[in-house]
Length: 206
Image 1 (cartoon, rainbow, N blue to C red):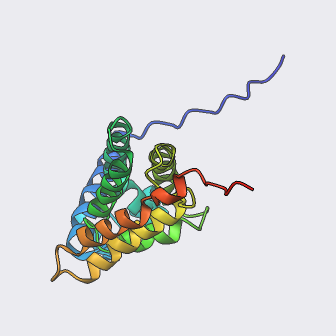
Image 2: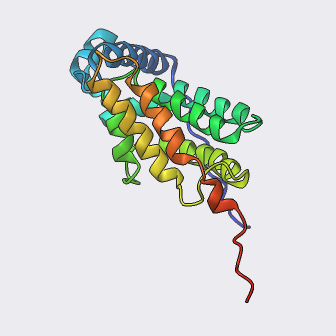
């Protein structure tokens, strides 16, 4: 008899394990928002009422915990990308979505830097955040390029790195709350295709 190759479903958490997981995630959100993503994991475990070993059983490393914390924002960003995919102005829609990434990354100091690093590290726990963001952004970028409003040589990888760099710059310059918006406007100008590049070339008769 042939053996099934279907993956075995993950075992549901016991009630006490689920409570510990939820408390750890709640405390991590609070600590990351207040202290940045380099907040003490020992303190997070202590505030959740568990030992550090319990934290590591649920989240093997800091990036795994950051990934779990960022899932709610990831869901919102993916939903926003689907809304903007129907917008009348594809270039503006793309930049609006990049701005949403800046906003969400700015909620936790250190997240922008971590996302930048994860883009080139397939082993990172944050890759599960980066990949769907990249796919969503690529669809918006392709639509903008197809409309002729964005240069063909722009890549989604460059845009995501640029976006995380803007978030990092804004994080390092809290006294200038308008910095991210100004940098995004500069990004919009740089993305736009030159009308001369889209005009058919005229060859002299000869």
